[in-house]
Length: 145
Image 1 (spheres, helix red, strand yellow):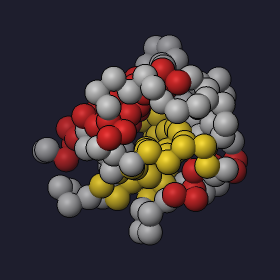
Image 2 (tube, rainbow, N blue to C red):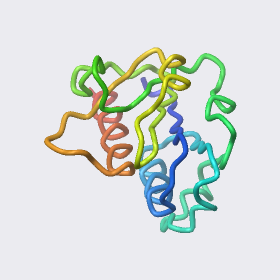
Image 3 (cartoon, rainbow, N blue to C red):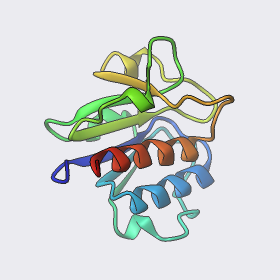
Image 4 (cartoon, one colour):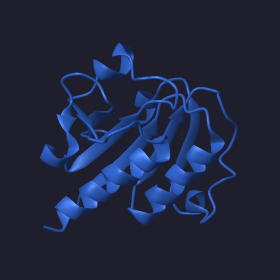
């Protein structure tokens, strides 16, 4: 899968620190693009390794799907009924991972457009940026097998 790529899309994130931490994870796991929708924060100054210097960041789009690349598989990541547990999930070669905001679940305007819905099995809810990091780590670990 080394010729594949991934995109992280954040639907209406509200916390600037999470966006910065997502940029850091994206940089560490070779994500090709990060996209955000909504106007709930302004610019990700919390990106300490300056991942936004190396990875394009499209901020505050009306809809994250405005930035989905051609031939890229949309994957919703959310803890909802019917979602596939991440350990059982086979990542698409070209993945567009969509994560919801810190205080809401993804709604039908996102879920209806995704080919897959996955969740990270945990005992409690996880922080948005941590969830992104876990999904990207899982992708990398499975690619290296």
